Length: 245
Length: 48
Image 1 (cartoon, chains in turn brown, yellow):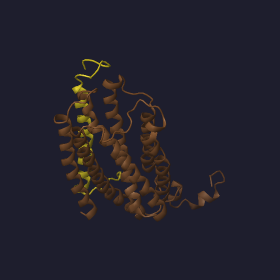
Image 2 (cartoon, each protein chain N blue to C red; image 1 turned 135 degrees about the horizontal axis):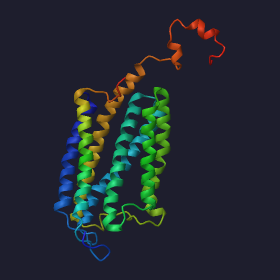
Image 3 (cartoon, rainbow over the protein chains, first blue to last red; image 1 turned 90 degrees about the vertical axis):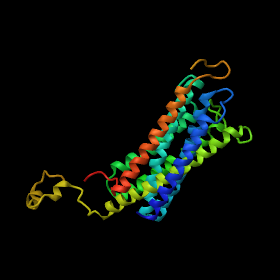
Image 4 (tube, each protein chain N blue to C red; image 1 turned 180 degrees about the vertical axis):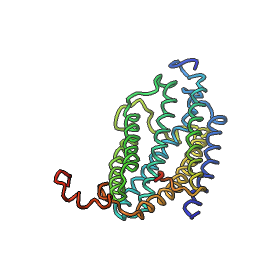
């Protein structure tokens, strides 16, 4: 087990402890929200997930640039891991938000700018994962997934600022000055917990991805055309005018 | 859910438990996936 994996395991352990404390406080210690009542407790899972998802995509973006500039497998592995973890958090935050929206807005989903851009973000980075799974050539996979990650990241600042740029149903930014300390503390603990979890996920997943990338790079190049593998067929191939070149 | 749109929302714990339960289920499942792959030495690659 290498250092990155060990650090990942430490981060995961710390993350789970903080998440358990933060969520426990959010459920049983924090006061009910003035308007939302107990439903407001969903925010102790939703908000940290959203923050950390955006940070994770920022890491993916930096790793994608590193992949393009340095052309190293370690950068690519870091990018692939960050995108995967980011997509999981993104889907999670969409689902949490929908569950919260039903009792507070009356609907599970509405085409609000914040919600719509967040859904686009999930699709954009989901495309990166899809491309990585279907492109077999390691060089093309590295370049195309890095470019796609950079393109997908364009939506991340739009998600963040969407509540400022458009009139939106989604809440504005909160500030610790306007939120009761009994609510800020579990939110912060849960946020750091999710951050450590995300770091642990990325570190461990990137080592798995790195092993696969190195294995793919070490594999011998195969010919593009299956017929080129057929032995003792050279004469027939060259003499057959109907055969595609 | 007892009331919507009339002052403070009351009840709604079923939504709270659903959100927390789903979050923990997903995070636990991904943690278990990573730990299994790490300790079994699997690359995560599809079988050839």
